[in-house]
Image (cartoon, rainbow, N blue to C red; front, side, top):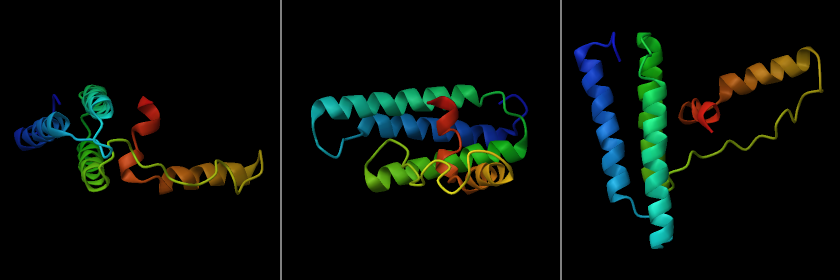
Length: 125
């Protein structure tokens, strides 16, 4: 966050506050207290982990991607009432042979087609 414009810094801090507010008011879909507490803790920990991981990002394009990912995860979480990222349902390397150009091409296609809300999920979990 060192080389951010003041407006971008405010936007990022606003997103962080919004996520913490969502965690504070979160109710699990089941309505069970234990599950609600677990999900609230997950939201707080995920926010802390990702915001700390990206605090030294200076590339404006990468900062924009991080902001878009955060906004997408907020909207999806609120819409589906699930705090966890929605998985993509493709079998790992289901279309490629175990080696060679086809495998590399398949890996490249998977990386490109990964939804914005899952960009940092594999890196953290």
